[in-house]
Length: 186
Image 1 (cartoon, one colour):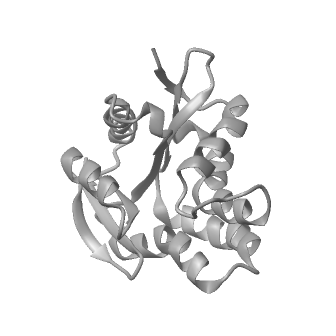
Image 2 (cartoon, rainbow, N blue to C red):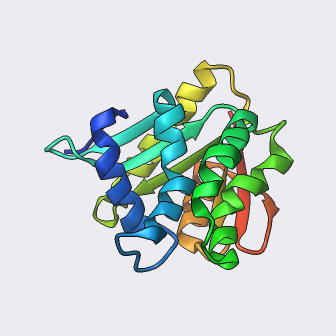
């Protein structure tokens, strides 16, 4: 039975695999496109806020899903733009816009929702209640830190994701061409 536990450095390889298998860029192969994916959705969190990251571990203690949180959007955005965005130069503008929606869109809602999150679970571990359990883990963790709200960006065509977040209690708070911002009061 899979279990939820705090992220550990040994999980880095597996969370990258989860990111590739569940990412918004179809049919990624090893190489440059993964740099864009990792820079946007994984590396900041595990390198700067591992204490706000949790994984689903399988029977072999390998990460098969994760939820990553940034407690405070302002320093996240500053570090992301300085250290991670430059890694994505050379990618097409539409590809960068699709990925960066999760970086720019939340800036409009920072005061009410200062934290943000990113969650992914391998398809074979979905629909088992693990997504809600990950959300419960991170939201309780953020609430203990006095965070009043959390937001996320979801692809505007990702109906499955939008339905999951709405069922959990998130409300749509904003929109750009490729992304919808959703917020949850804690």
